[in-house]
Length: 421
Image (cartoon, rainbow, N blue to C red):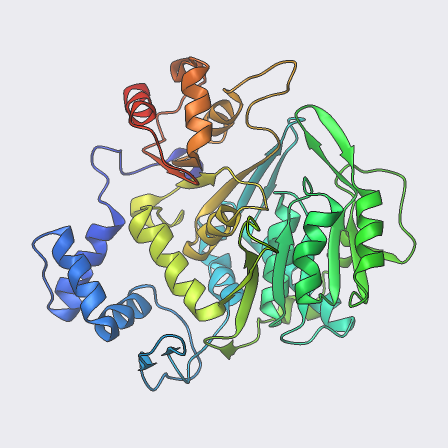
């Protein structure tokens, strides 16, 4: 049976992932909790037992055992899982075989021009391996920074996973940001590699970014290698830039044998930034191990997003609308860690200035059979103000949960979303 058309649990019968976790705690640890509050209380008072349970429940891989869960319980200076070795990309790519066997894709993407692309799990793994080998050939070492100036497209997720797989540290800015805003961030981390695009499409317009890319290269003396992805497929180029598509084209025994390297639990994974409302944006470093555990828990237990090839949640698809300049891009990407198909949209969620249209994302979600739909609170408020009728946007019957963050959700907007569904 085709996984894309089979969904064994309906919203009415679907068992939440957190209930599965509670059942697992009961069966494997002899722990029962009468309420969510009791479960939460245990999670914040018995830190060793809780985080070890998360490690075991999600089957986090390490070739070496950890000597403790929380070796140093002090802030700052807490030390988690000493002795363990992990890799975020390894946690993602272990799904390649079973997900592909079940017939579910890794990524489905669409842009404003209606161009739809699907990336299989094996192809995701091959492209990650090819780009990782390319970066290593350029001398990228563990701990080196790779900076990206890319939109919300599959190539960006591939670039991140390739970076993480070899122990380099990822950081990204969205291409709607100008030179000054990007340099305020990237100058602080001194990247060795810059991966950029020639431009973006937004609200019906193609916006050239080659000038910004040239300015970034000129102002970042630490950059030794630049990869350019032709998102707009322009004929223009920048001297000295390597072609992204060519760098991900390798398909041979070396790519087939590639494995992400094992890294210490706290090895840096990515740098994200504060908003910069008071002085320069503050770079914030997250590590591989912490993000594996936190993102698995956020996606599976809190957002209740199922693995797309697991029998009970077969074919589920996760969408959270985000630009690459928002940390929800990172959270959306984390769906892959659970073996979940991620459905991503690149472009304006509200149409163009001349033709506002707040049904764009809903029609996109209906076309691609999205299960979990996430967006910023402002998006839902705009939908309500525009008086859109979701019943006119296609078949949204698979959507069983809406996610919102970024700003407070007003009660009337919450009521609107509830009524629409």
